[in-house]
Length: 301
Ligand code: CP
Ligand code: NVA
Image 1 (cartoon, helix red, strand yellow):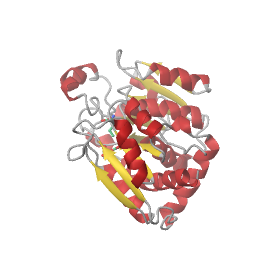
Image 2: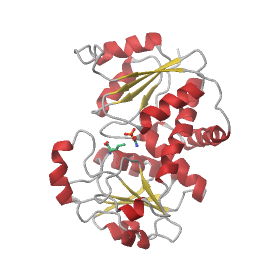
Image 3: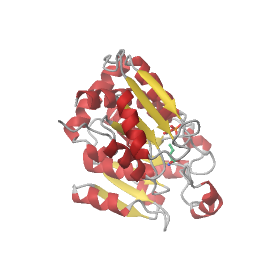
Image 4: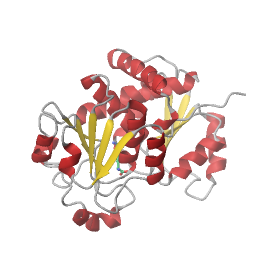
């Protein structure tokens, strides 16, 4: 029996497969997507909060003719201690795809191991591949081929930063991350991307990161699950705010990117977030089309 494919990381896809997904996502922007979920159900498990991911998956699954079932742990037996490996096999008996947002990445890996249907990572502490793949789609629509271009990451070396590192290996753009000491991205993700030829550089200076970049990215200073560290992080990240001055170091046509939700006055100023270079709403909308294309791709495998 053929193993089904999962999407836990951008590193799970070849560049050729990403091109296929982007081709489909472009079509999905213009017309209803193929009805490849007709008669099928998708379970979406959210162990953390979500606005964009939840609604874009629910709407996308509906547009594809499928039935989305959203579960939050409370109200399921998961909250009462039913093992993940049992839950994975139960889901697989009823549903055709599992979408999961959770804390430890190993929970998504375990779900994928025991499930006999495709599992999609809707964010873990380690990675946020659906967001960054959609972000790369947004960038490709604007700048064409990303190979050789420079992308900046300013702030926390978090799940988004790690997925941008994976994207650098896939797309061939140069990624320069400016993170405060103690908040660097995941070493294993970085080493594995570097081995695949990713051009990733770590520095401490936001101006160095943004110099000559076509895109300047940031994210919240305290991710979900880090609420208790928020005050300490505000101090550690105080020099890492994306301001107009930071944007002036990038190329004139550069864009500002943020996965949202954003904290105005912390990681980004109001004028940058709301300014002409900001493409945050376009990023959020493209989640819908790219995730539809990911679902379609996994169902065909
Ligand atoms: N960007 C993102 O994943 O948003 P949500 O947490 O609202 O899903
Ligand atoms: N890094 C953020 C992303 C939210 C979409 C978090 O994990 O909370």
